[in-house]
Length: 174
Figure 1 (cartoon, helix red, strand yellow):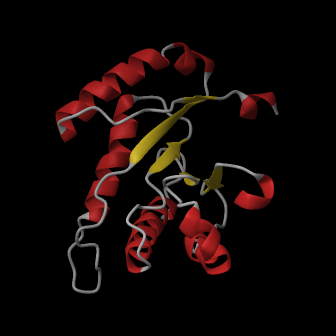
Figure 2 (tube, rainbow, N blue to C red):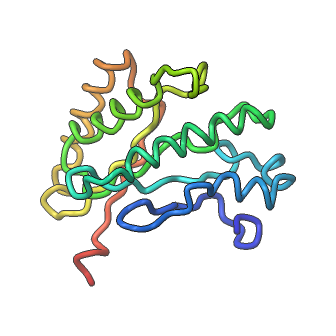
C-alpha cells in the first residue's frame, strides 16, 4: 500500500469499526524488505485514529494500546529499534484534559507488570494528535493546545517533541 500509492502515512481507523489488530504483523509479513529500508515510525507512518472514550466506552481503546505495545515489542524482536506507531489521533477532541487522559491511560497500560507481559524497556508514552471538529472548539483550539502544553510539561517534565493538530468539518458536511 505504501510503495504502490507512494504515501508516507496511513491513518488506521479504530473508531466504531472492526479492526485488523495485527496490521503491523501483516505489513511486515508481506513487505518486510520494504519496511526494513523504509522503517515504520521513521520514514513511513501508521497512525491509529482512536475511539474517543467519551463516545465509545468499549474496549477498543485498550485493544489499540495493546496493539501499539505489541508492535513495539515485535519491532525489537526483528531488530528494528524504532516503535512503528508512536502517535495517535483523538477524534472529537474538546479539551486538553482529554488529550492528557489518553496519554495517562497509555502510560498505565504500558507499565503493567506481569510475567506474561514482556513490556520491559518498551515505549511508555504516546503522542496525541487532537482532531478538532466542532466550529466552536476549532475557534478556541489555540487555548486547548496551550493548556495541553502546560499540562504535558507538568506531567512529563517537557513539552511534546512536536504537535500536529487536525481541524476537520467533514462529518457535519454529510
